[in-house]
Image 1 (tube, rainbow, N blue to C red):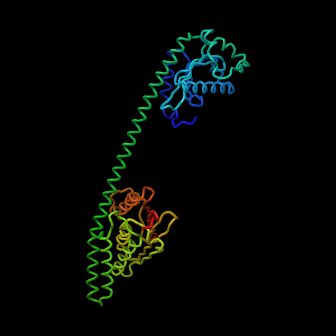
Image 2: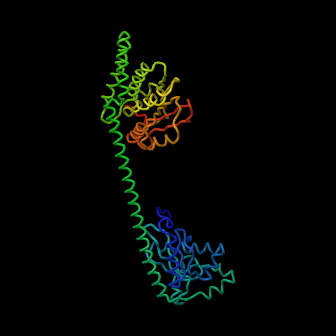
Image 3: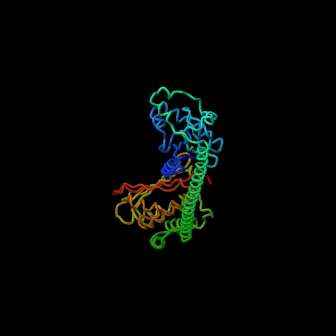
Length: 409
């Protein structure tokens, strides 16, 4: 029987055991709880010597389980206690344990004899067999099994039905409350995350409208343009001004949904690199390995420049040796992967964890990287985002990989 509920998952078996033991002792009757297949999930309470010893025999135990299973299913179909005789001829009853029309198992009770006339009118749950009589030591135990008035036996069954119904209803109500609390926590977490991502997006947009360039860089650009104008003909100055103008134009051209083509994003980064090249001359070199087939792919606005800016802040500026950075694009048939790799001294595992978890770590550009990760996940889903790897050794650098869908504009 295929059920979405399992008895041992739905009910606390330890509490069930305590209830069963107390009920069996007070009513002086055998009792056990079985699952859908008739297999006990509690230890037997008050079992007769005959039944306890029978279940030590593997073959006889299998017949007992089959009887319990058949009794439970009959009670499930009836929706109330069912009285029957097991294959040994003892009178038993099964009380169904059900929730929302799903059968979890049953209380199996009895192992008694009742008034002979009444007993003969009670049907066997399965075909009667005399297999147990092949064990002479069981025959005496069978003959000495207790008798109980049928009226008391039947009232015990209905009492247990009410107890079982209350137990299941209480467990169901508790489960619903737990599910509601869990969903409320999930919703609260999701709302908190959404607020955080929206805040990150607003910060990114504000920084973009403020040129996403720190005043130090803007000051250096203007000074460099002034020096070039004084020392040279206008050609290099013109190129630099055009690059800078293209950057400003790109920043002001962003559409409302925060998306742009990868070609436009790369052009912006290329202008940024050209200006830095004039400033720093031979202190760094860079390579763009971006095949043209990715030009029209949609990507988030201003997603690469903050990562490239970190290269200058934390690799080029602090040292005298030559630095280099490579931007490479590839795909797996479904998603585009942008890889940014430098030859700096790397980032420690602790810093990587802080950066990706959103800790306000201003070292290594943590805030900007975390915002990029959040924007990717907000726009494209939780399976997308940003990963950082680094051996954290001199000159072995850091690799950052961004993943987003390969969707054309």
